[in-house]
Figure 1 (cartoon, rainbow, N blue to C red):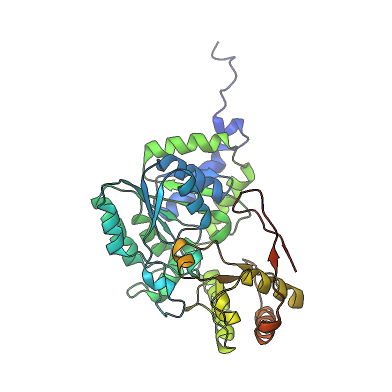
Figure 2: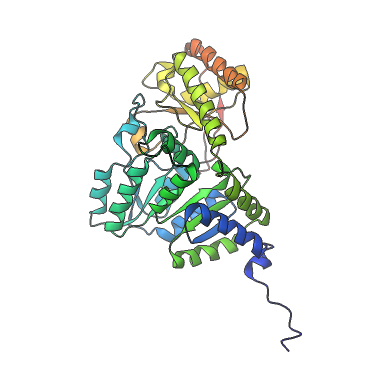
Length: 384
């Protein structure tokens, strides 16, 4: 009897997710990005893993611009070969090139023309490994055109896409009169889709998202997301984050100005920082800091010393790319969290680094204890 049958619950409702909340979230992402298909995940890493598992096959190539360590890890463990096509200028730590996240278009074209198939091109926004430096809109558009010619999809790691768009607005000719939201849409228009951690640029505690143009890929990832039980709270928070954070450029401007302030102060103090400044962190050339070309655990030793004398917590930069390792580079990332900081807080950080720089020859060196887990992202332990 149809009148007495209980209503059939949707998969979302069975997981405790309200359909209206999910629709509000998806509509907010589509409004900003233009992607017609949206999938929610509990975290950026889940969204990244789900998309790459769907895209990659053993024996294929993946092109990227110094991708985040977890991205490189997934590419390798899924049996694909990563070809780093980032511009050579990113390896020049003193270069004042404004877009060190750019793709070397000649290298990309040569890779796409190989007989070994390229599964996809992955482009990180505000490249973490190279100092948070952005990719130019014109460069991304040219790369996407090459990909379309070879029928290869291009996806964005968009966790810091608002930051990248802001730096485009400030630095790229012809973009000064556009809003950050308009530039974000232009970046998305030059891609097949994206994945992102909403906790970076969009002001929420947790949550990940994939935006797509491909309906079949959307159906596949939606099934994966449902099996991973997306948090109803994350859905509601992301709906608010994607509706609100990009409406005004003020918070991006203020945070970038604070990063510039930190960068300028460290530069004037004579510390070897990467040029130019990014918008969420300042990166330090660790070997340049110690005045050496070789050394073990220098970054960890400096981080421990900074914490000991000031209470400021810093970390080494991301796991180095093959190109950085080949050049013997080592970086430290001084990140500005999303909280609001006063210039007095930044001055405290600067004074700590100035003191450490003055005493760099006497900073105790740490010894790394053996890590037997084999998991590359597990926190290591050190001793004096």
